[in-house]
Structures are given as C-alpha cells and as structure tokens.
Image (tube, rainbow, N blue to C red):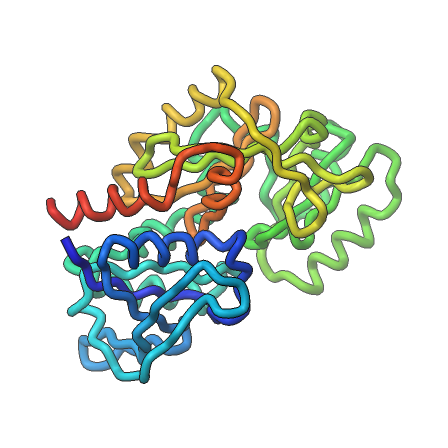
Length: 314
C-alpha cells in the first residue's frame, strides 16, 4: 500500500543521519514505496479553510554528505496527503502550538503523527503529572517561597524550564548550594512560564532510561549514562548509550501509560525513567530509533510504519 507522506521537520541538510529518527522514518517509508514530501514549519499555511505547505519532493539515502535530494517546490494541499509526520524539534512555544492548531484541521482524514490536538495537550513535563504514583516528588510554580520550602524538604533538587528540551537549562542544586537565588533570577529573566522542580533521583548515575513505545506498546529501550561531573544524561552533553532491558517496575509504568497513549493517538512516544520514577513523556519529536537498533534492538522505524499503515487501512 503506497502512501503519500509529507514530513514537517527541521532543515534536512543539518541533521545527523546516524542519529536522527526522522531520517530513519523517511528511509523506511521510501523503502516501502511511499512517496515523500518535505517542508519546514514556516512553510505551513492556513487560508480559507485549506491547509497547504510549500513542499518539495524528497528522496533519501543513508550516505553521509549526500543523504537527500529535493525536487522543485510547489504549494501542496495537505488534505490530499495520506500522512503528515510532525517531526520538528521543540521548543514547545506558540509557533509549535499554532502548527498543531493548523494541522488539526486536516486530521484524521490525513493522519497526522502524532495527533496534533493531543500533542498540544500533552507537554512532556505536564502530561506525566496525570499519572499518580509514577513521578518523583515534583513542584511546578513561580512562587519562590514554595520552591524554597520544597528544597528545605528534599534538600537535593533539580530545576528545569517547564517547556525546555534536550537537557537545556537543567540544574542540580545540592543541599547547601548558595546559587539557588541566582538561578531563580535567571529563570525569571529567560522564561515566562513556571519552573519545574523535582527531588534529585541519585539512581540517575546508573542511567536515564529511554523507552520507546509504538501505539502504546514497548518497542525498545536504551540506557543513557551521564558523563562524570554531569547531572544530565543527554547524548549531546556527553551521555553514553548502552544496551538495557526493562525492570518489572518499568514494565508496570508502560502498562499504565499504554491505554492513554493509544486513546490519544500518540503513536510514537519516548518515555524517560530514572530508578523507579517516570520523569517525562516525549510526544513532540521522540528520538532513539537508531540507538535501539545499534544495540541489537527492534527496527522501530519498521514498527512505526506498520502501525501507521494499519491506521490508514482502518
């Protein structure tokens, strides 16, 4: 079954083809005979009830330095496409939210992955709060007195921007650290939103596990171990990936999430687990396809296209 697929993504010339999950999805789609169109978020237009994009035909190949070819651009009515992959990276800002509102106009006749309304309503650090008993102690506020009281109770804490991504702006504040006041001033200067504060989970030294779910079902996982002297496990700040398996607790977490992910049309999600705690549910532009495969895990790109094709047949 050949599908017409439009991919809304960041500049394709800048991606790392050895780690980019969108590129893995494009390769698999092309191998299945699906036609590909490429456009960026700023190429999206809504006019008189129609959703269009100034898009270009795309072909891809797994060759560094020569990984894509683009055809001539034209204005494409996205309602004529079978699938739109919304794959640009956050920040989850008003531009991102506006794109979900626009793409919502064509979904589900055109299958948008992930469902744009539910992406909009499931910011990664807020969505996770809907599942009681899975998170570490967590505070979301701009109130300094509340933050100071939380710190006094838990002593060792993590500060994060509520809508940040990629580990940017994440700080660990240990007991006795005198920099909390300055950090809160910085957050107030750079962010208008509340701050998310969590009790530090020391098991992060053993790794921050990324578990990928396809239509609610576990598809694979990798463990990301932070570098020495670094509180974050993200790969681009020195985190090291390693093979892993799921613990009983992690399987239980996935089982709790599965029905809600399916109900919301969140076909491709990546959850982060540290120790016994769920810390984030990534729904905007999850990653990890290449890493799982590199360590002998499933071909998640193939599993995702199986799920998408099943939805289109339905």
